Every structure is written in C-alpha cells, then in structure tokens.
Image (cartoon, rainbow, N blue to C red; front, side, top):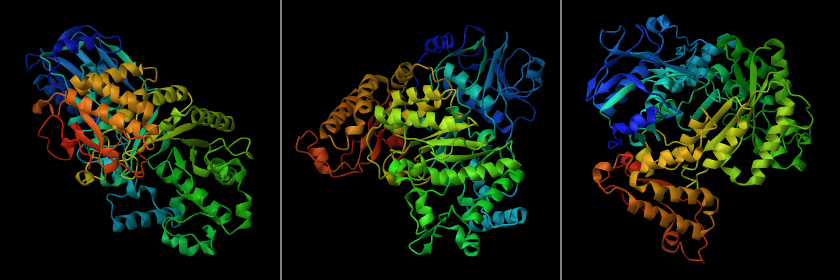
Length: 633
C-alpha cells in the first residue's frame, strides 16, 4: 500500500471536477472517527460488503475505524451505505438505477452512497460443488422437469458464489460501486488484484464532501470470465467488483454465454439414444467429449428448441445461448449435404457462416413463436464469424456475440475489416442486441510472453461501441487457484493494465486515456514512473514484432533494466506503489538472452513465458529487496 501521500493530495482530488467538492463536516481527523456508517437493519449482501469495504479502507488510510450501525447517534456525521429508512426519509431512491448505476448525495452532516442491491436467489435444482455425484443429482432433477436427458446448466452455479465474501456474482452491486467511487475520490486505486495491486494514501483528515451525482455506466454488461473459475478466483472476485464489473445476469442470464448447444448433447444417455444427432466423420459419429452436433438432424433441432424453452420456463432466463460446441469450426463430415452448405470461397472466417447461421436462425425463429419476450444468443466465431449471405434478416429475438481479439486492432486492415463486418451484422440484426467478446490470454504458459499493451486500441474501440453494444465479456487467463507458485510468474503481471483500463472505460469511454495512464504510472510505480512509462510505450508500439525481431526484444530488456534501476531500493517499499512491478521473461532461451542485440539472431523459441518480478513476485515468493531477481534462465 502507498503510505506516503498526504492529505493535500486527498483534498485536491475531492475538489477536482470529476470527483467531490468542498466539505461541510469531517469524517475522520487525527486518527479519530467523527462519523459512522449507517446501514439497514436487514441489509442486502452487497450492502454489507460495501459497508465493510468503506470501513476497511478508511481505517487503512487514517487509522480510524468508523463504526457500522443501523441507527444514527447524536453528534456523529452519517455515511448512509445502501437503502434504509434513513435514505427513504431523505427522499433518495434507487428503483431506476440499473446495471450497477449508483447515487452519491450529501447534506450538512451526512453522505449517502447507494444503489440497487437486490440479492440473487438461485432456482433449484443447482449444483453446490464440483462433484460427479452432485452433477448426477441436479441432472436427475432436471430430467424430471424436462422429460429428457439434457445437461443441467445450473450444475456449475456454485462457481458464482464466493464464500469468503458471502456474495453471488449475480448480486446487484450499485452501493458497492458508489463506495468505491467515493474511495477513488480519496485517492484509492485497485490496479491489480489483492493488496499488492492497490494504492492507499495515508491521511490525517477526511472531509465530508458536498455531492449530488447519479452515475450510470456506458455499457450495461461488463464481465470478466476467468479460465479457472471452477477452482475459485480468489482476490480477482473482489478486484472485479472494485473495477465496477458485473455479471449481467439481468441481461444474459446466469449461465455461460457461449457454446450453449453442448448442454443438449453432452450427456452419455443422449449420445447412446440418438447417435444420428452427432456429426458423421470418417464413418463414425463424433460423440467423444461433449460431442459434435449434426446440424442437419431434425431431432437435434427439435431437442434444442425444447431445451431453450425449458430454460425460459423453469429458470426464467432473459437470454439463453444456443451457439455451437467449441471446436466445430475445425470439423468436417462425410455427408455430401453437409459439405454442400460450406462456402470456402469466402475464406476461413466465412466458410461456415451460411451453414451455421441457417441452423441457429431456425432455432431462434421457432423459440420466438412461444417466447417472443426472450432472447437467444449466438457467437460470431471461428469459421462463422462473417455474417451469412443467404439470410437477409435474422430472427427478432437473436442477440449477436461478436468474438474479436482487440489487441490485433493495431493493424488498421484488421480493425477496419471487423468494423465492416459489424456494420453488416447490424443490418441483419432486428433486435439490435449486440455484445462484444475479447480476450486477455497472453499470460498462458504456451503464449509468447511478450509485454502486450494496447491502451489506444482499447479506448478507440470502446468509443465506437458505445451506444451500439450492450457490453462485453473478456475471457481472461488465470492460473488455477493453489497452483500460482508452480508457474513461477504472476498471470496478471502484464495483463492487469489492459484489464484495468478496459473496466474503467466501460463506465465512461470519454475519459482521457493519457490522464488514466499518468495516474497509473505515477501512483503505482513512484520513482520509476517515467522509466516504466517509457517501457510500456515502447512495448505498445513493438510487441507485435517481438516474436521475430531480436532488436526490439533487446530494447525492451534495456528499458526494463533502466526501470529497475529507478525503483525505490528500500525493502519496506516492496509492496507499495512506490516500488516497481516488472514483467519479465523466464524462458526466452539462453541464446536470446545472451545475444539479443545480434543481427544474426533468429529466434526459434515460440513460447517465452511472462514472469512477475518485484511487486508481483511477492505473490509467489518472499522478496528481500525492492526488486527481486530478474531471471533470464
């Protein structure tokens, strides 16, 4: 935590145009609490967490612990967290606040931080843990409801409850967002998960601000999805909340928003009873793993429609995904009728577009007949990324999830091609329901491990998507919980900056990215701020060449060395924002490390792994100096 910022820094933030204005009363002074946090007698789960969040960070900043009460005490200023009879008496309402929006209001001796905090209530049958017997139980209950052998999508619902926080990811978080906006105004930052990623100023006085703001996000749907959700995501769950993300269940439902067809065909009972529903390849039906669907099967069509209707009727889902099983794009079939639907002349990304979207659109139209008020979604993905040519208008209940890779948008040709495809999709999409899907996967062990930064692409793309997209899911690589040390590097050592910028821009795409970066470098890196800014700027311009250009790799190493030299050497700063977080490569290969300046260097190693030194190395092993060893093994 950063402990060297004074109260003048806080006051400056409080009176900034984007923050809070002049104060009337005092919350904390000289280590003494002069206010109290007031909540309802029976608060929502997220309200309780928000109150603890406020109490904890005020204590970290000032040493003063604000009491949490349900009734005001005479002579104490009040911070109302969430709705209660106190906020009702003040005429404050949250009924119109949706998707995490919040209110901040104040009076002479009170401050209100509140949003809609409805608790999520799961519908039975749902899975309590990752266990074969538990999966069998919930599937058996689902069979009774559907009269068939579909996989119950709620069998993995346990992943969305965080025991240590006592919240569901689907709980409304408006009040939590309001509390964290207030704390940001006081100088707190959460650049990465956990205490090691936070910035907390030390102050002697916290004034009560005058404020009257209603804050709504530019994107209603704001979700990070971690590869290893089934093992738990630890500090990332709280980081997501502090970034203002949401699960968006009121838009997309509680289940995953991809590859929904697998839940129709993945049970062994279904495979044995109806082999004709599976793709015929090399003389065999493809039933291994989840199975590959035969989109020409009338029975498959019938069963998928039945499954979607059951999801709507029983689980009351607002949207259900009907997309294909992952990996379908790489498949082929013995069936001449199947092959005749392909259009390879359109290139890889359009080869299956008419084939796949012809089927998906038929499913959507049939479901629309019985449930015109619900949505079905499908991915523009792989060999069916381009819009179909044989469908002029898609079903009115169909929502499109456009899978892209934003970091590739440094290439203007790719950027413009994807913009053109989006324009063509929107012309065919009567619902106007469009969601983008991005990736943050450079930390995967098999990836190149390059320092991939693309702040300008993030800002430019999101500005174009405002008013077009309901929001976005970012698929994020994360180490499985409990295995972090075995990898030798922190998975978000580099990725956290891209994710931080993305999440904050979801709320206001018109923010000045240069100002956001200046805030990041100054508050997170302290004396190494300028050196790290130079490194990241160089990386943003050159990462795409570092898998082949030894000179660029060498330049990057040199810039990191300068940043290392600029870092505060005091061991006590190791976990503070004044010390330096460095992303390094641990498997570049001896030749690359020894001769990265050589013009004759021809790299053969394709997967150097990103590693965390300094700040993030504390998560893997103790640090004994301001910067842990820069490994080039």
